[in-house]
Image 1 (tube, rainbow, N blue to C red):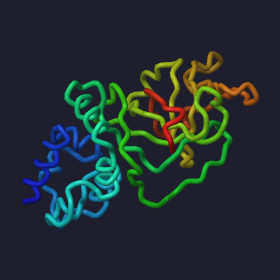
Image 2 (image 1 turned 30 degrees about the horizontal axis):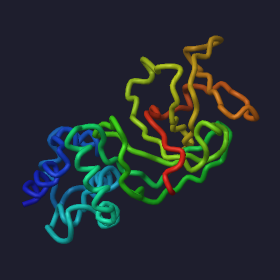
Image 3 (image 1 turned 180 degrees about the horizontal axis):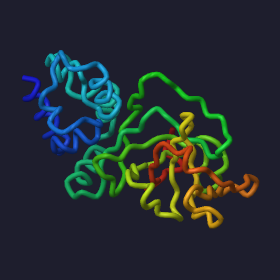
Image 4 (image 1 turned 90 degrees about the vertical axis):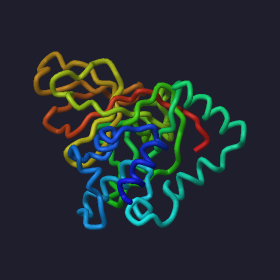
Length: 230
């Protein structure tokens, strides 16, 4: 029954099993072996990565989609629902989960690290989004006025950033101490092997070098929405 419900969810999301496993950070084949005996840490990966209701998946109780996300979609007007439906069918955009975490502008900024379980605030439509993309919030003013505080960032993981960074774009960098920072990243000419150059858009905030050894993960900012009624 768990397999059947998972297949139902994947059909609803137009997602393959492998895409689901990649999104949730699961090893190949693990998705089809999920059960009430599954390690809690594995179940937590699923709950923090997608909008499926774990209780429904394992037992059939409740709704397929987490209540908060479902209510967000159901609260749309008929015109908005029709627009989303047309956009999804045409492939112009997809609904992306906005996660309850933020990224700050400065390398030395202090952003609170929330150790509680991440959750989906709402689903947001983004053009040209891919299945693994997520959205987070921007804090701080070092990227102002291009990306003001409170903006929604559509981000896409750069898994091979050590081999090829793609200098010149805007990235969210997860540091080894848990901070997330948003910067335009350029090549650090003096020592490109060990450092990157982090550029701020606010003229009052200095650009600065960042050791690659401090970087734990990299996400490219694909799009951002400066004012979405948050």
